[in-house]
Amino acid sequence: MRRWIAYSLVLIGIVILAYPKASEWYNDKQQEKLMAQWEIGETNEEAGQTALEQYGGLTTLFEELDAEETRTPVPTDTAAESGPSPTALPAESKVEPIATIRIPSIKLKLPVLEGATQKNMKSAAAHLKETASIGEIGNAAIAAHRMRAKGKLFNRLNEVKVGDEIIIETKTGKFTYIVYDTSIVLPTDVSVLNYNDKDKRLTLITCDPVVDPTHRLIVHAAIKE
Image (cartoon, rainbow, N blue to C red; front, side):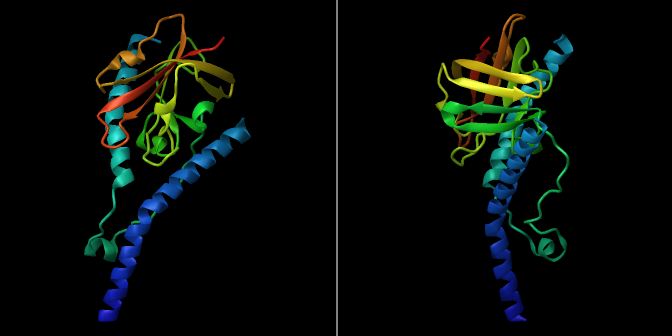
């Protein structure tokens, strides 16, 4: 009996240690899968209000993603006996990217999904619904988690400089934006989504700093005609 208990404790310890790596592996695979799918497949007042609500909701999303990245599950006796395994991975569902985003200066290439949700932002960048469509007049907003792992998602976005290119390819074309401003703002500063009816702009959004973020890192770019 004692030997069985000892084996059980060792197994639980292994599961706890393996979970973060298993989760990271799964998210990396999802990102690779979305990129593969892409390569194979190769504004009114109400909408504006919805966009602002989505921007405000990013604070909660960034907090949840940051917490999940650092959380280590501690299974209880009950969970160990009857609950699902901590290493159980979520079931896959059909998700297709609407675009890819590349920033050559920081060696970034990511799939872009429609809608800023926790699920989408685990493995891709997300286009905020109701902001302008990519390549169109207005301000297209794209958000991504700034993971602590070097080079993952928007981790290196702080290295982007004025004059850098941001290349976005959709199913209808390729658009090159040139960075004209970077800034760090409070989460309540919704002015980052402002635009006029002439320019084709892009706004990239992530959290700042990487650890225990309190602000948002913003990159503004305008399309290169």
